[in-house]
Length: 151
Image 1 (cartoon, rainbow, N blue to C red):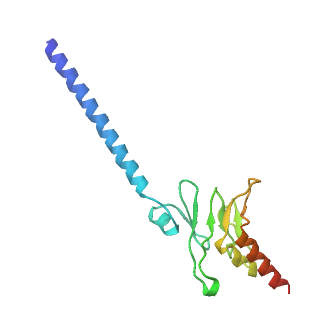
Image 2: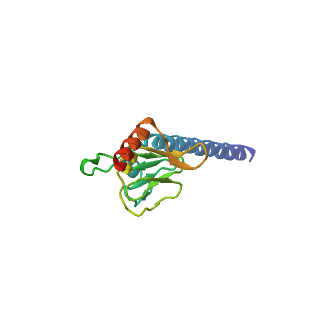
């Protein structure tokens, strides 16, 4: 009788070990699949199945909070390569607004300086609020556009 109990115990232990082994193999495979889903741009984000905001241009948000903006080609304006990070979003009819509210809208009145933001960086600033990072390229573009506009 005692031999039967020992054998039953070993069978239970063996099944538990196999179940644990199977669980670890499953988790390893799942981790590898997630690592293979590298997101570099808007198209990758959409392909990964993450939510797309129906703004203009469209924006896709990854689970990490990174926002990828669809590149739009329109006339001689070129492609928009603006990026938004840190829970900030790009909005407005001309993609000129950087805020912490998704889908921010504007009056859709175009200003020449709005084209400067097409390659801008929207993100959390030192004060904790969302805003455009003042890169040398953005500052120079704004000075040129605002200077030409006021003449």
